[in-house]
Image 1 (cartoon, one colour):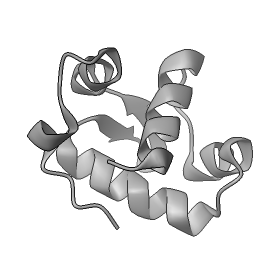
Image 2 (cartoon, helix red, strand yellow):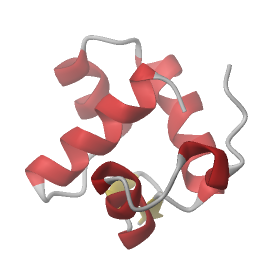
Image 3 (cartoon, one colour):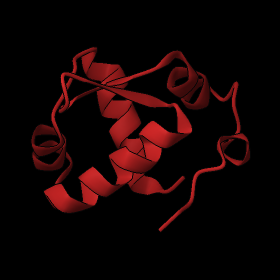
Length: 80
């Protein structure tokens, strides 16, 4: 996990919405391509899920990570 991952998860949690990579990138001030790469990793780790091909939302596993009930080491997420 890296800072981008934490910020993506936090924004998804705080908003309670399904958001696109473009909306996430704009609000977090990262490039869309970087956010898309991180979302792919987060999806593989099971902390976010994608709906209708481009709308992302946090999963219960993602919420567990944010609350400290799940450690980053347990996610087996390849940091870039």
